[in-house]
Length: 305
Image (cartoon, rainbow, N blue to C red; front, side):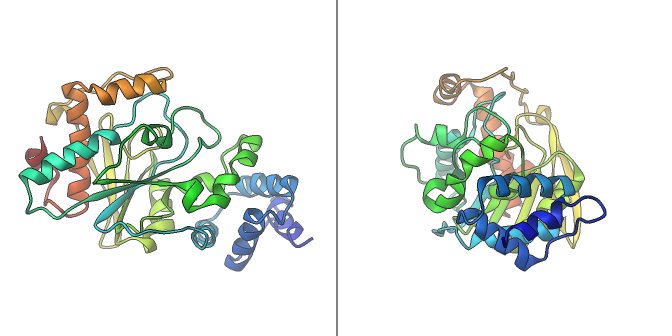
C-alpha cells in the first residue's frame, strides 16, 4: 500500500497533483528497483509522473537514489560521454576511432595532460530502436583510452528494469537521468540537448557530481557531432553557448542513413574515409578543449588534425 500514495500524488489530476519530496522520490525508486511495487503500479506511476512533468528537484532526488546502486571504478583524468541508450539509426558511432586518434595525439603531444573517455552502455531503451554503444563495444578489442562500463555489471537492477520499460513503450524519467550516472567517477561529463530549457535542466541535475559538465547540440541523443551545432557551458554561474561550423575545419557533413545496420556501421569505422577520420578528430578536439587540455578549440584542432 505504501506505493499507492506516490501514484496518488502524481496521478490525481491538475488540482490534486503535487510534487514529491526528496525522501519520497528515493523511497519510490527503491521500491521500483527492488520490485516491491507491482508492474502495473510502476507503469501507472511513471506515466502519471511524466504527465505531471517531473521537476528538476524530483529528478535530482532520483539521481541521488540511483547512484546508491551504481558500482563504480574510478577512471582518472576522464570525461564521461552521456549516451542516451536510445540506439543509433541515422549515423554510425564515431567513438571506436577515438582510441587510435588519442594514441597518435599523445605520441605527438606528450606534454598535454592525458584524457580518458568513459562510455556506458546497455540494451536499447524505449521509445526508439537502432544500434547501441554496447553493440559496437562488443566488437572492439581492449582499449587504453576508451573505458566501457556495461550497465548489466555496474547497475544490474536498472538493466533488469529494461523489459518493463519496453512494455510501457514511452520515455519516462529514467530516460532523462540514466545517461550520466558516472560509474567511472569522471571529473567531466558531456551530454546532448537541442533546446535551452533541457540544457539548463541537465546542468542543474548533474552539475554537483562533476568538476564541469557540458551540453552539446549533436546527433541522435548522443554527444557525437556530425553536423554544425553548438555547445553550452556554465561560466560564472551563467550558461553560455558557442557555435561551430564544420566547413571552417574542412569537414563535410556526412550522409545520413535511413536505418543503419550494425554491419554498415562497423564497415565505416573499420575502413573510414578521410572525412570520417577528420570528423572523429574534431570530436576529440572539442573534448580536449572543454576539459582544459588545450586553450581553444582552434588550437586543439591544429594539434590533432
